[in-house]
Image (cartoon, rainbow, N blue to C red):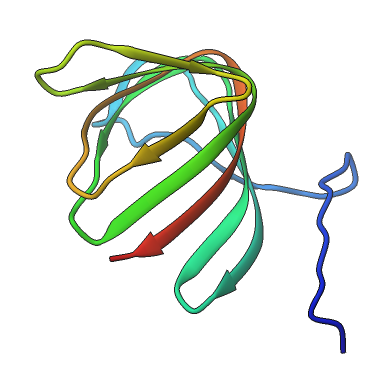
Length: 117
């Protein structure tokens, strides 16, 4: 059995679908698609996409996420701080206890790595 894996979502691959809960929705009708890739030793990896809109994010202290923006543009607004924009080519780290707003400006796709801390 190989220890090397590759993953390429295609039109034939059905993603997991979700959207913000009504209490977290701020603007628009953002739709989320997730293509999980692996989960090993508490580290989750995959591809995630979202359509335009804004929703509230409230992370507890149990998770750290790092992602690479493949396409699109987002704005993260941490409570009490100025907005920060990210687009294709950016690497972003969302540390535990992040609270704020995720705004998808143009449909975004990211490759993510998250782990419990």
